[in-house]
Length: 196
Image: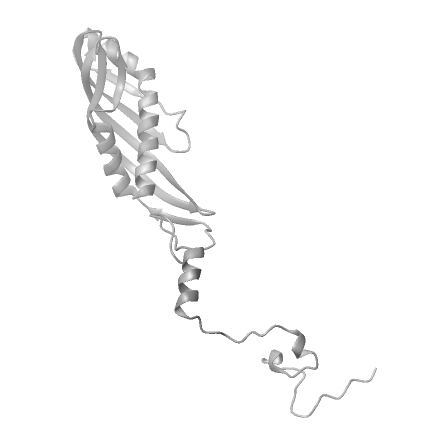
């Protein structure tokens, strides 16, 4: 096979092979940059508004995996949520038990996965509680050794009552009865942290 002669001044190899002159160059679209006027720039911003999220970065327009440490803020927020009087751990006829002080340790991460923000956490929770149970004043403490965002149905509440028999009964009722309140607290935590 005979190789075709290359026109003078061109090389078959080299880094800038795309700059060569070719016979069918008129078929290719024009790729020279064009300056946008102000109206075009404003219109493009309206069509594709910038992302606003506490989790995702502005540079990650594709929404690939991102991770951000939220441990300090998430622990403080969960302590605030649990200590709020409006979150009843146990509620019913002549019964209302609330957490009065909470201590949270552990880690939390905010994730942005394919453009969807999520909050992940692994906490250890200690709470003191008080209130009325079947008309009697009660108080005590409980612990959740593994409060994990990936298993909000599988956490264990370990309550203990202080001194009175009614507190012991309330503690036993909290073992199962406080689960829905703790799940609501986790959902509120996620919503608050991802909105911030």
